[in-house]
Amino acid sequence: MSRWLIAVASIVMIGCSSGNTENDLYGSGYIVVSEQTWSKDYTTPYPFTVPEGEIACASNPSFGREVFFHPKGYTDESYVGIPLNKAAVDGLKLSRLTPNVPYN
Image 1 (cartoon, rainbow, N blue to C red):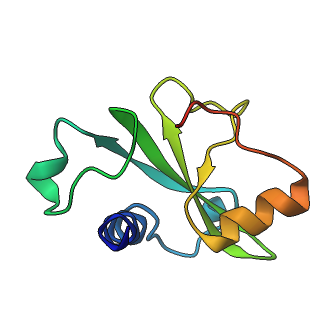
Image 2: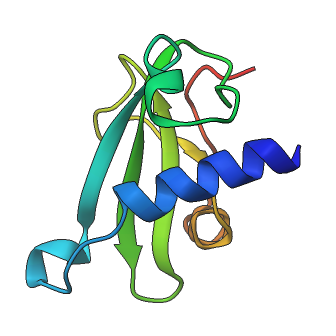
Image 3: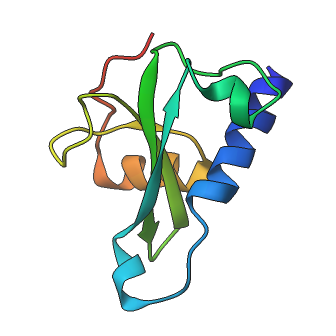
């Protein structure tokens, strides 16, 4: 479990770091992750149960940077991703939303 958390934490730091501009208030970027290419960039095992997806970030004025995982094909705004940090969990609770993407 700790390897998984370290891998996700490193992705979060890379994929969600950006400047503090007005454009960052909603979306702050994303990175594509793939089981096939994971070992080229990371030394930990691939941490997700689906072969491809995106780590997406958003800023919440109340909680800070929210980080979510979206499987490939479930990245438009109608889908709520899997929260990967406390800010994302808290934001979903406040909004009364639950993830609606396949992830098992």
